[in-house]
Length: 189
Image 1 (tube, rainbow, N blue to C red):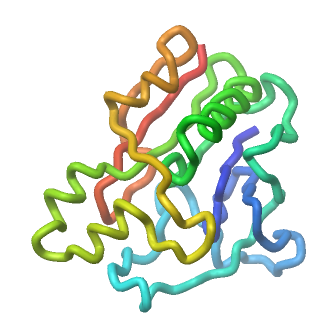
Image 2 (cartoon, rainbow, N blue to C red):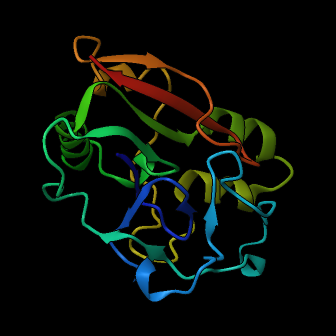
């Protein structure tokens, strides 16, 4: 089983798409306008002007709050993917819960693919030319209670959370972004 957590408006083919909000996919006709693949995760170029971005409904397979116990059996998941998610969770209480649940649910040798904003590159690229976009990448857009960045991460800090005794880490892209992100493939030992 492959699980796409915090899927938002991106519905991944071949994954169980889960979010805290959304409309059940079974209620929507096929094809689903939000359906895509990992290779084409964002179908349209990223619009830097937030007022011009296209908003799609959140169409999901399963509604769940990932800050509670996950509804999956121990060692039952082959892959978890979370895109632009880590930074939205508080790093002292919420993120440890996510890590604990991912570790519990993933099979040994299974992978958790996630990414997070590369703040250093964002500042280098956008600070002088587009400070508003730079600020949004650092703090998020605050359009709802989930659109706030709680913390920042880097390849140097991830091993503090995903310790080498439990995880093998490889920093590489998860999906292609139009703005600087760092990807991590964490394989459960």
